[in-house]
Image 1 (cartoon, rainbow, N blue to C red):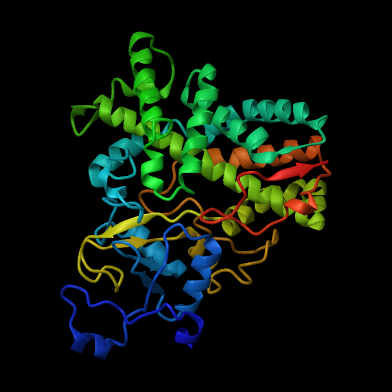
Image 2: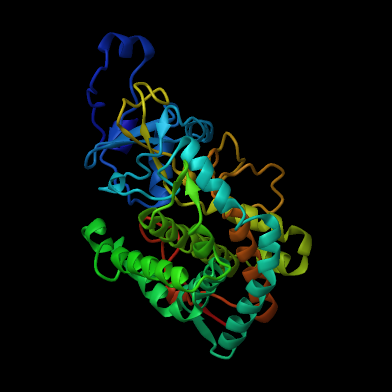
Length: 411
């Protein structure tokens, strides 16, 4: 069956330290596939379905990596940092060459970083930030209303989300256009022949690091009530935080705080544009709006965080040092956990999705992201309750991320 559906499959590679006798006793290893890390979530799910019994598959592309395919296996790997280290958080080439704060630190060091960051994203602080979110959303949408159409992502979602992040972190509002340009360069890099080289182009990560270091210097000279100023007095492990780690932290907050939220917003709007009944229900019933946001978070999860196996036999599949992906797009579509996972269901009784990961490295900004999504959807439908995607622009999802980065809407 596999050979017919996936002719590119080959026998599993022989791994260092493997024992053929043990393999025979335990059953065959999960098959290997010529599989690209940058594939769309639909392709991840297609291949995972063929290996549902194994709960994993291996890609021979590049240096190779494992893909865990079940909700339980992915959750267990997130939570078992003895077996899966964050020393490598992606299967993209060169992903383990950077120190990303707090993504690639563990143990007591990670606990200290997380404790200091947590106070900036508490539910109470998110509630305090929400009126500003609502005002920014309303102003942008009302400005667009007379245009008859727009790019939802570029004309609304991206600047709206970035402004919210900048406000939360105390970044100067006059740097909005610079940060929008950096974000656009990072997005465009993913479709280049060499994504890593493109990301490190002058207008990508180097420009982001320059901004971070310039902002650190500004706050050292002109302190304010923002996170960067607070971080100037932080110590981790009894040592003062250096500017390299401080700049890394600011870069991570930017990279983690914009695109995923824009992606979820655009996917929700794309669904509403195609499913009028769900849109009418969202408009009419305030009680189901939070559940709708949770369902959109589940069904549109598209990130593929990685880990490095810290010991032989990690997860029952990986050897020490191998990369293992924990795709949210697979965990949150596992039919063993979510009935009819492909269906958007605002009445889903049980929705234990892990759109923000789980375990010690679960996203600290989850409440912030939820508030932005709900607020934007409410304000958009208050001002522009009727809209559609032009028929000539309805197309299949692009590679890697599920939504189009230019979701066009007309009204």
